[in-house]
Length: 411
Image 1 (tube, rainbow, N blue to C red):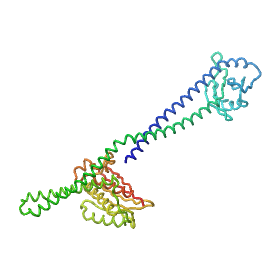
Image 2 (image 1 turned 90 degrees about the vertical axis):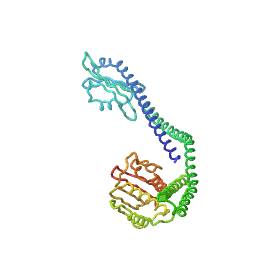
Image 3 (image 1 turned 60 degrees about the vertical axis):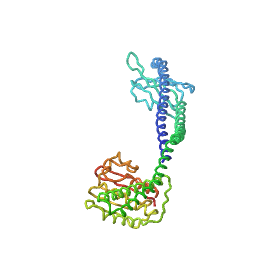
Image 4 (image 1 turned 30 degrees about the vertical axis):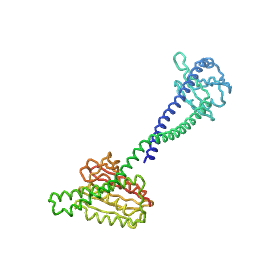
């Protein structure tokens, strides 16, 4: 139980750290990208201001000039408002034609910032109109290569993802270690409590047996001298002693189960036959206002302890009868490829979503259950029996519609 809790806490802390650190990394990464992009846009804006006068120098010339220098940090192309090329300086041969295909039909009044990829190169482009006496006379496309920055941020992204994974694993291991440290006093207290329950159950059996035997001797030897009230009192004391004995046996069984001291003799059980016998017994004691039905698949066998499986059925069916005033109870047994599935369904009072996770807790009893007899240990014992057979048990329920207990055993 504590090992499972440690794992859950470690997983919870690691997941929470992963979410928070991932959020931090994402914000950091996109903030850096945005800062870098804004800086590059500002550089293009400054370059645009410096080159804007080229339009007026070359617009009236009859020649179109395009110079090439691969060492340029910035390149630019100037056009008239009807998209006729005027002048430009470029640092990548052939880029002008590609840009004209991509941006040639754009509105010359439009301000535009866009990333562009060509021949494994990444560019940041700025398109701005050129004004003459308040009217648009043309436009300029200014750009620069951001390939190195792109590759830098690609590597940064991979590095941040790797750091996130490594740090999450380390946090998970550290959380597991710290959870183990935190569990030590809790586990010590829990083990001490389990030992007390086990020792108390052992120690109470002997005086309780002596008490019950003394009542029987008193009833036999002094029965004729006792008044009717005295006889009734002895009978009541014997009944209470039986209840106490049953409660102690249940506590002792659960204590042994906690300490893994329960050894069961596993044999091949004809499960279908066993369920039919148990259902026949319960059919006789079923109240007339409850309709009992079964759906039992033939020839199903299980490796386990027949007496324990029978006790499991008694607990679940008795529980169904106790909480069903009228309606139906159904016992089913089916087998698929790798599991044996058994259900006990009733149409009784049901449980709320808040009560459902607590039904297998020891001594837990809902408000409705407190009006009925019982110790609150039955379903805890049922769960222990299922676990001893490497199975699992869970419940589904709806208020005023009933409860279904599902049991699955591996074949």
